[in-house]
Image (cartoon, rainbow, N blue to C red; front, side, top):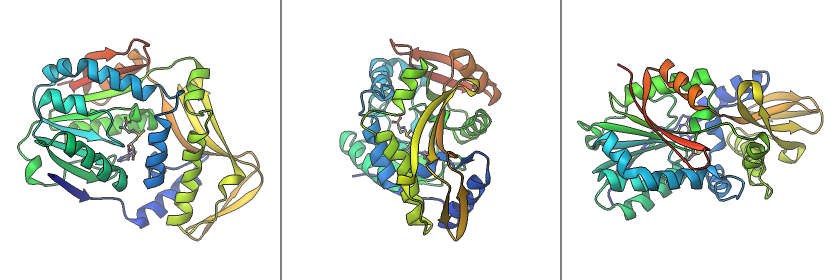
Length: 317
Ligand SMILES: C[S@@+](CC[C@H](N)C(=O)[O-])C[C@H]1O[C@@H](n2cnc3c(N)ncnc32)[C@H](O)[C@@H]1O
């Protein structure tokens, strides 16, 4: 199989520093990528199979229905996917584009390895390049012969842009513009819906979303020699109308002290540790956001339920 893996994962010292920064904030919050160790990636794939989490299947259907039109609009090139996860979405694009090279970025090495071996079996003529990295810090693709002299087409599905604050989203989109060197970006974003539907999507009845959040503590305990007890936090997903976002948090069940990397963190009873948030963008809000980062929306494909839309972005100038 034609697979290359480049490992640019942040070193353990970065993890300790970012945890320190995030736990000093009020409310406490760490970068969302820390949710994705091997177990986190496995749990996220399970979330996508929960009946309440309709986004994944609707976005896949949208891609399957419109891949030929999308390929016609983007023109040929090397697809660069940001945060590939379990690679359930890119197949129709690779088929429609007939790409000879595919570059997949993800922070989770295990997810990346699994994703690329599945894709390589389904697309034997496409060279697969996996880059394990924090894509918020990547300004250029690393040097590799397969990635040179190819026009680039970015792909960022799953409404993952919503995990950033709007300011960080603008920063990410500016970076992506530079990394794609003039090429387009296909961006999947979901829209605000009834709060009860959104809260259920991020707090499924089977408790998988709650396990996904608690796994962050297990991951930090393992990587930073910590003693956080996941049972001493309850999980909550709540719609925050002012910020147009769903906020996922672990709420301390009592006054307690958590030790991580040699530091002690005191949590009051009822205090929130935000594990991630997901900003929802109306069509107008999406257009305003991408414009701030130097992009314009060339075309937009929306699913029948008006939950998720794929936006084809082109550099504004
Ligand atoms: C919400 S999942 C979406 C997965 C897939 N794109 C989809 O649409 O189903 C986010 C994915 O991005 C990866 N990820 C999150 N933050 C990242 C970062 N800063 N850099 C690289 N990958 C990241 C995670 O490991 C995970 O696979």
